[in-house]
Figure 1 (cartoon, rainbow, N blue to C red):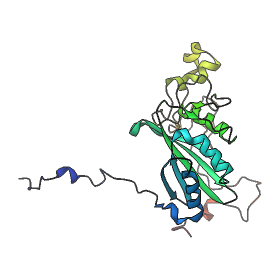
Figure 2: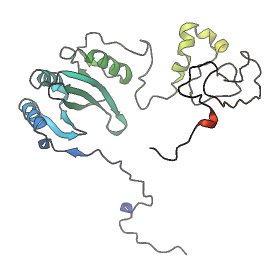
Figure 3: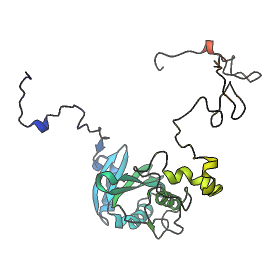
Figure 4: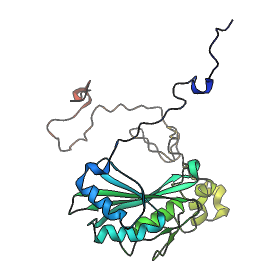
Amino acid sequence: MRPYSDKQNVQAKSYYSDRFFKAPQVPRDKVSSDKVFNEDLKSVKEKFKVSESYIEKGQLVLIIEPTDIKALMKHLKEQLSYDFMCEMSAVDFLAQSDQFEIFYQMLSIKKKKRLRVKYKINNGDAVESIVSVFNSANWAEREMYDMFGIYVNNHPYLKRLIMPDDWTGYPLLKTYPLIGDEAAQWYEIDTIFGKEHREVVGPEIRDTKRVDPKDTTQFSRVGAEVPYGAKPTNEKTNFSEFQEDGGVPFITRFTKDRQKTLKSRK
């Protein structure tokens, strides 16, 4: 007979210890703990709505309204000496809230301080370009549009940056297949040769995890090379020397019997 267990509040007593595992969060400090950041926050709050602010990993993080981004960036640059925009992009939170998080990484060379601006937009919403304030945002905004499909209003030349103009889908979405979809598998064959040559050329191998040691057409067989398409040999080459004959030695010739495996990091 199964031993009796208390059935009260059973939902709060998970059978699996990791069922409700929550990854530890990076520690956050109060803005008042840093004099420079505290003054910067006061200056921003005088003109803009800041829904949340904190210090994380030594940098000030501001969460703002999407409509304030251009004016805020101008304020940061002209009034607070954050004159260098290092990076901007998006984070896919579509599965959780059907939203994207947009972030801007700022640097003040004069103050030697870093600041991050963040806000969230709903799926399908556009963001405002800040190229007129920071020209370094030009390619970053194009890349965000290319990889996530987020449209940028008033961008001077908004077109795909990495992927071809006729590419289907946005590769940095979490729902995008890691090895590409059918269109990706046939894209180069269709573009270069035409769809009528699909059976002649064959699909593109996009699964980088698959390496066939007997395939003499797609993979290099170092030490046991055979002509293209020939039947592979069963030879197994064990490399005992890591330096080519006639090469310049570092100190002494590096061979297998001279290598050491450390038990622990020094």
